[in-house]
Length: 187
Image (tube, rainbow, N blue to C red; front, top):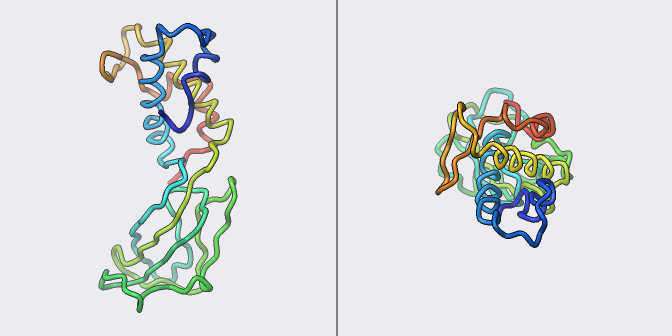
Protein backbone atom coordinates (compact mmCIF):
# COMPACT_ATOMS: atom_id res chain seq x y z
CA UNK A 1 0.00 0.00 0.00
CA UNK A 2 0.91 3.65 -0.06
CA UNK A 3 3.14 5.26 2.52
CA UNK A 4 1.26 8.55 2.96
CA UNK A 5 -2.26 7.35 3.68
CA UNK A 6 -4.46 4.28 3.94
CA UNK A 7 -7.72 3.03 2.51
CA UNK A 8 -9.33 3.27 5.95
CA UNK A 9 -8.33 6.91 6.37
CA UNK A 10 -9.61 7.88 2.91
CA UNK A 11 -12.88 6.01 3.45
CA UNK A 12 -13.36 7.79 6.77
CA UNK A 13 -12.87 11.19 5.10
CA UNK A 14 -15.27 10.27 2.28
CA UNK A 15 -17.88 9.02 4.75
CA UNK A 16 -17.79 5.46 3.39
CA UNK A 17 -18.38 2.85 6.07
CA UNK A 18 -15.50 0.43 6.57
CA UNK A 19 -17.90 -2.48 5.93
CA UNK A 20 -18.68 -1.17 2.43
CA UNK A 21 -16.12 -2.75 0.08
CA UNK A 22 -17.54 -1.77 -3.33
CA UNK A 23 -15.07 1.12 -3.69
CA UNK A 24 -12.01 -0.50 -2.12
CA UNK A 25 -10.24 -1.25 -5.41
CA UNK A 26 -10.68 2.35 -6.61
CA UNK A 27 -9.50 3.77 -3.28
CA UNK A 28 -6.52 1.38 -3.15
CA UNK A 29 -5.48 2.54 -6.62
CA UNK A 30 -5.78 6.17 -5.54
CA UNK A 31 -3.79 5.61 -2.34
CA UNK A 32 -0.91 4.19 -4.37
CA UNK A 33 -1.12 6.88 -7.05
CA UNK A 34 -1.31 9.74 -4.56
CA UNK A 35 2.06 8.84 -3.06
CA UNK A 36 3.68 9.59 -6.40
CA UNK A 37 1.52 12.62 -7.14
CA UNK A 38 2.24 14.25 -3.77
CA UNK A 39 5.96 13.43 -3.93
CA UNK A 40 6.16 14.86 -7.45
CA UNK A 41 4.32 18.00 -6.34
CA UNK A 42 6.53 18.41 -3.27
CA UNK A 43 9.68 17.46 -5.24
CA UNK A 44 10.89 15.04 -2.58
CA UNK A 45 10.32 11.62 -1.05
CA UNK A 46 8.98 11.11 2.45
CA UNK A 47 9.66 7.49 3.47
CA UNK A 48 12.76 6.70 5.54
CA UNK A 49 15.24 5.68 2.80
CA UNK A 50 18.95 5.78 2.00
CA UNK A 51 19.91 8.06 -0.90
CA UNK A 52 23.03 8.64 -2.98
CA UNK A 53 23.33 12.03 -4.66
CA UNK A 54 25.94 13.75 -6.78
CA UNK A 55 26.36 17.52 -6.59
CA UNK A 56 28.43 20.08 -8.43
CA UNK A 57 31.02 21.74 -6.20
CA UNK A 58 31.29 25.54 -6.22
CA UNK A 59 34.15 27.73 -5.09
CA UNK A 60 33.95 28.49 -1.37
CA UNK A 61 30.87 26.26 -1.01
CA UNK A 62 30.37 25.22 2.61
CA UNK A 63 26.84 23.84 2.46
CA UNK A 64 25.17 20.91 0.74
CA UNK A 65 21.42 20.91 0.26
CA UNK A 66 20.14 17.35 -0.15
CA UNK A 67 16.97 16.61 -2.11
CA UNK A 68 15.23 14.64 0.63
CA UNK A 69 14.79 15.49 4.27
CA UNK A 70 14.54 15.45 7.23
CA UNK A 71 18.05 14.06 7.50
CA UNK A 72 18.50 11.06 9.76
CA UNK A 73 22.17 10.34 9.13
CA UNK A 74 25.02 10.95 6.70
CA UNK A 75 26.98 7.85 5.73
CA UNK A 76 29.66 9.57 3.67
CA UNK A 77 30.62 12.67 1.70
CA UNK A 78 33.32 12.59 -0.97
CA UNK A 79 34.84 15.57 -2.79
CA UNK A 80 36.55 14.09 -5.84
CA UNK A 81 37.24 15.85 -9.15
CA UNK A 82 38.13 12.45 -10.69
CA UNK A 83 34.78 11.02 -9.59
CA UNK A 84 36.19 7.74 -8.28
CA UNK A 85 35.08 8.62 -4.72
CA UNK A 86 37.81 6.62 -3.02
CA UNK A 87 38.84 6.72 0.62
CA UNK A 88 41.37 9.47 -0.11
CA UNK A 89 38.53 11.87 -1.04
CA UNK A 90 36.29 11.06 1.93
CA UNK A 91 35.42 14.05 4.09
CA UNK A 92 35.73 13.17 7.78
CA UNK A 93 32.47 13.17 9.71
CA UNK A 94 34.07 15.61 12.16
CA UNK A 95 34.19 18.14 9.29
CA UNK A 96 30.41 18.51 8.83
CA UNK A 97 27.21 18.85 10.83
CA UNK A 98 23.48 18.72 10.09
CA UNK A 99 20.22 18.99 11.96
CA UNK A 100 17.97 16.00 12.56
CA UNK A 101 14.32 15.82 13.51
CA UNK A 102 11.06 16.35 11.65
CA UNK A 103 11.71 20.06 11.05
CA UNK A 104 15.29 19.65 9.77
CA UNK A 105 15.88 21.38 6.45
CA UNK A 106 18.27 19.02 4.65
CA UNK A 107 21.34 21.25 4.84
CA UNK A 108 24.75 19.76 5.61
CA UNK A 109 27.15 22.40 6.97
CA UNK A 110 30.80 21.84 6.08
CA UNK A 111 33.81 23.07 8.06
CA UNK A 112 35.81 23.18 4.82
CA UNK A 113 35.18 24.43 1.29
CA UNK A 114 34.34 22.04 -1.52
CA UNK A 115 36.32 22.03 -4.74
CA UNK A 116 34.76 23.45 -7.87
CA UNK A 117 33.66 20.71 -10.29
CA UNK A 118 30.84 18.82 -11.96
CA UNK A 119 29.35 15.95 -9.95
CA UNK A 120 32.51 15.93 -7.85
CA UNK A 121 30.61 15.75 -4.56
CA UNK A 122 28.99 12.45 -3.64
CA UNK A 123 26.84 12.20 -0.54
CA UNK A 124 25.21 9.07 0.85
CA UNK A 125 22.60 9.77 3.48
CA UNK A 126 19.43 8.53 5.12
CA UNK A 127 16.39 10.78 5.22
CA UNK A 128 12.64 10.73 5.57
CA UNK A 129 10.03 10.07 8.18
CA UNK A 130 9.80 6.85 10.19
CA UNK A 131 6.22 7.94 10.88
CA UNK A 132 4.54 10.18 8.32
CA UNK A 133 3.37 13.45 9.97
CA UNK A 134 -0.40 13.57 10.51
CA UNK A 135 -0.76 16.78 8.51
CA UNK A 136 0.95 15.18 5.49
CA UNK A 137 -1.25 12.09 5.80
CA UNK A 138 -4.32 14.30 5.95
CA UNK A 139 -3.20 16.18 2.85
CA UNK A 140 -2.84 12.82 1.04
CA UNK A 141 -6.36 11.92 2.24
CA UNK A 142 -7.66 15.20 0.80
CA UNK A 143 -5.95 14.59 -2.54
CA UNK A 144 -7.42 11.07 -2.70
CA UNK A 145 -10.88 12.39 -1.85
CA UNK A 146 -10.60 15.18 -4.42
CA UNK A 147 -9.64 12.77 -7.19
CA UNK A 148 -12.25 10.24 -6.05
CA UNK A 149 -15.01 12.85 -6.12
CA UNK A 150 -13.96 14.17 -9.55
CA UNK A 151 -13.22 10.84 -11.21
CA UNK A 152 -16.43 10.86 -13.26
CA UNK A 153 -16.36 14.56 -14.13
CA UNK A 154 -15.68 15.94 -17.58
CA UNK A 155 -14.08 19.04 -19.04
CA UNK A 156 -10.71 18.79 -17.38
CA UNK A 157 -7.30 17.26 -17.89
CA UNK A 158 -7.53 13.55 -17.13
CA UNK A 159 -5.05 10.79 -16.45
CA UNK A 160 -5.68 7.06 -16.44
CA UNK A 161 -4.55 4.43 -14.02
CA UNK A 162 -6.00 1.07 -15.00
CA UNK A 163 -9.73 1.49 -15.38
CA UNK A 164 -9.70 4.63 -13.26
CA UNK A 165 -9.63 8.09 -14.84
CA UNK A 166 -8.89 11.10 -12.67
CA UNK A 167 -7.58 14.63 -12.57
CA UNK A 168 -4.15 14.99 -11.02
CA UNK A 169 -3.94 18.77 -11.24
CA UNK A 170 -2.83 20.35 -7.92
CA UNK A 171 -5.30 23.22 -8.36
CA UNK A 172 -8.04 20.58 -8.07
CA UNK A 173 -6.73 19.38 -4.71
CA UNK A 174 -8.41 22.17 -2.76
CA UNK A 175 -7.54 22.18 0.92
CA UNK A 176 -4.52 19.90 0.42
CA UNK A 177 -2.39 22.49 -1.41
CA UNK A 178 -1.78 24.83 1.57
CA UNK A 179 -0.87 21.83 3.72
CA UNK A 180 1.48 20.44 1.08
CA UNK A 181 3.19 23.84 0.76
CA UNK A 182 4.74 23.15 4.19
CA UNK A 183 6.35 19.97 2.81
CA UNK A 184 7.25 21.25 -0.67
CA UNK A 185 10.94 21.49 -1.53
CA UNK A 186 11.52 24.97 -2.85
CA UNK A 187 14.52 25.18 -5.18
